[in-house]
Every structure is written in structure tokens, then in C-alpha cells.
Image (cartoon, rainbow, N blue to C red):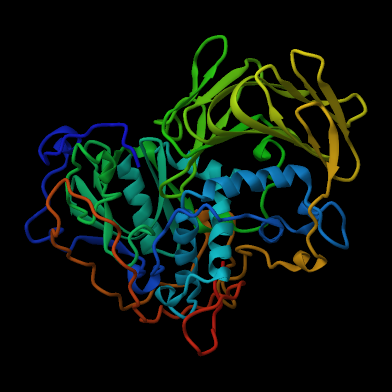
Length: 547
């Protein structure tokens, strides 16, 4: 990962200036203010978060999240995915190539609260577990999760620390944390808060990038600053100039807190302008040299350094590393230009219509949106375009003089118009049942087979289906502050006291997985998805769900 901000390597200068050195004895006296009881071992996954270009997101995943009625075009028979749902799934699949820390953080917390067995460290990275992780990863694209994260970024760190103490030390619903720096996003699971003194606090976390390791976020409450050892094995080390991403810094607006029950079904429809009806774009890139600006004013919509709240950015997808994805609002009254020096994908959604522009390398394109049309023009580089609307999907390769528009007709149908500066042009009308088309460079239109999934795919279990926490007690509600979870265990492992093992400024790869087999605490919560594990005894509380 290429850093964009140089940070001084000395512990007493630069961004480290407001952080007092850690006591020689470790993290100071035991100032534990709240403790959920969860620990990276045995309650975190033993395998590390990784980038993987082979990850997919398909009809089964969509149905688990939104139900067959919202995904399939017909009520019975094989499932043909609605075109608008297909485009949303493609955006999710592109984002998870760069890591799935969000899904791992949520899964580990959900299994701990559910009292699922075996312990999470004993789960193999099976196909079933991977599928569950990527479905939970996808929840960060949902309007209610985005809104909850946005609302939590309006607080200072003192308020965040107090809120976390309430979440971890009472019957409130526990949370995951999103961290943002240098245009990147990462997810961790907090399990304890420790007060070092009046001005400092430690938030202990399970970090999917460092399985079974003791990791923490340090809060400088007086200066509203936090630091986090994102890519350094020593959580107290200062960053070096050769690797500024080794340690992340931020304030209250660069950290968000999302309650577990925000991810419970039923979910808000995400296919119509990301659920809010307003045009939205998603940019996924594998490099750090790109720009997105308004055509007339040159104002920045998003940049590689953007974090949520900057410019028009609503969310930075929490994946971990590698490819990054940003979600942003786009005004429908001014065209914008996207340019990149590396492969990437730009998806624009306006109502039921969407347009995805894929760059195989360096290139640029200008996009216009309004209430009736999405259009791409002024293309450079090797670029392909996919347009989707109720009635079908159209794919084609764009040329430098191409103008490609997806327009709503007066009859309610959608029309794809493609033309160059010469005589080549084509028109495809989309209406009724889904039909897919490919347009060749000479304007020839060919219909291609529409993907079908067997009828059995409709039987997917709902993701994180809300269930009563325990017999004769209050069920989980949609308000985190009023929800309840099983009482944490009365006996907890002590908070760790790690010692410095790496000199400041050095980095290394995440440690190898642990094979701890300690059992999680008992819980009355049930769960809803089963999974393959390493053990040969039957699973008494299957993986994922429970809330």
C-alpha cells in the first residue's frame, strides 16, 4: 500500500506529539471501565483478512440479504436477478476484492453474543464461512448502516469513549468500529475500554488483520485525537517515513460506531439510488492516483485521500487493504470527470438506472446525470460500459468519441443510445422481463443468454434475522440504546499487558493464525446459519445470526 502522507518517525514529534509515551510497565494501572468479555482468542477468527480477486457476490448472497421477492424477477421457478440488483452486487463484489475485515469483525462479534460453538478461532476458512463473511461485509453498503455510521461521526472522542463504555459494560447492543485514514477504511471489534488517566483511554479491539493478537486504539481525549497501529506488529511503535500507513491517526470524525442490530433484516431496498432516491456513485480503484471533479467548476467530488465526510464522500468501504471503494453523492446539475492511472470501476446509480464504467488501465470519462438520464462521454483509454435498468443489461466497449446514454422514455421503459462521431450508432429498448445485450464496435446488437439460478437458491436463510434474546425477556429492537443482549460472563480473562517487541517505525506481516480452542461463554441467543468447522462434534449453536 502506497502512503500519501509523510509522518515523522520520532515518537515525540509530528502527529505523535499529543500522545504521551506508554508507561514502561505496559498500559498503566488496570483502569478497566468496561469489558464485554470477548477476546481475540478464542472469540476472533484465527485466519487473517486478505485481499482476494476471486471473491464473488451472487444471487444466493442477494437473496439472503433481501429475500427472493426483491431479487428475482419472477415469484417461482429459476431466479433471474433484477438488473438493478445485479449492478449493486457487482459493486459489492468489486469492493471486497480488497479485503473483508468488516464481515470478519461483525461475524466474530455476532458469534460471541450468540454463544455460538465452537469458538471462532476453531472455524476453518471454509466456503460456508467465507460466504457468510462476504454477506456481512456487504451490509456496510446498506442505507441504514451508512446513516448510522454518519450519525456517529458527529461526536468527539470523549463522547465516543463514554458510549463504548455503555455499550460494553451494560445490556446495550455491542458495536463494531470503523477507522479511516489516507482514504482507506478498516473495521475492528471493540471488547473493552481502559482509562489510563483523565486524558487518555485505550479501546481494546479484535483486529481481523492481526488474528488472535492483542490490539488497541489509543484515545487522546484532551486533543480529540486517536492513533491506531494499522500495519505494525508493535501497537506502541511510531510510524516511519518509509511506511506512513503503519500507524493511523484521526479525530472523532474519522471514526464511527455501528451497533450490531443495525444489520438485522429486513433491510431497506438499496437498489434505487442506494435506498435514498438520490444519485450516488461508487468508485473502486486498485491504485492511488485518480481524481473525480466537477466539469465546470473543477470542485473535488472525491479524491484518494478522502475519508467519510470529506467532499461528497458518504462512506469509505471497510475492507482492509488493496482495492478501495468510496461511496459519494453526485449532484445531478453538473457533469463530473473521473480520471485514473490504474485499473478501476466507476458506478453511477440514479433511481432504477445505473451505469458502470470499467477502466482496464489509465483512462478518463465524463458522466452526466439528471432525473431522466445517465450519460457517459469523452472517454479515453481502454474502457467498457455496462448499463442496467428494469428490462435488461447492455454492455459495450467505449471509444474516444462515444456518447452512451441510458434514458427513461415517456412510456416508462428505458432506452440505451450509443453513438460515435461517425455514422455508427445503436439503440436498445429495455422493458418487461430481463434481456441482456452486447453492442459491438461497429454498432451490431446481439442478445446474449441471461444468467439463471436454480429455483433452490430462493430458500436462503435471512442474514442476521432478528430473534428474541432470551425467553421471557425483551426482544432486540431497532434502537440500539434500548436493546438488550445476554449478560456478559461474570469471569473474564484479564486484559493483556503486551510489551514492545518491535523498534519504532518498523513493520512486519501479520502474525500467523492461532489455533486456540477455548470455548466462548454460554448464551441463550440462537443463530441462523450453519457452518463447517474443524471439530467433529455437532455444532450446538451454528454460525452467524443470533440477534
